Length: 88
Image 1: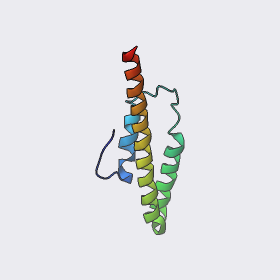
Image 2: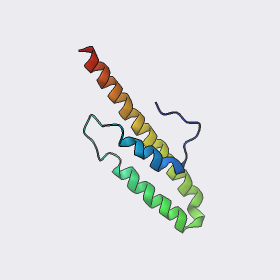
Image 3: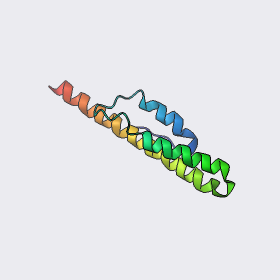
Image 4: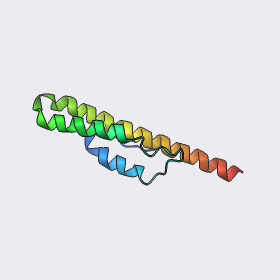
């Protein structure tokens, strides 16, 4: 389980890089594309339009947290699968 006191928008890419270290045993390698695209658009909008920068920061923080949860779920599934294999 990933634990940190505070995950922020600046953590998105670092958290996403963990994905490549954790194989997805269900075969869904493209499950992160939509959130990556959304993050990129919202981040760019926040830089282009200072009036929505606060909203953009909140949204990209949510993206970081969402990706962390997805990776944690993937890790948990992998641990459960490994436990089943060792139990055979």
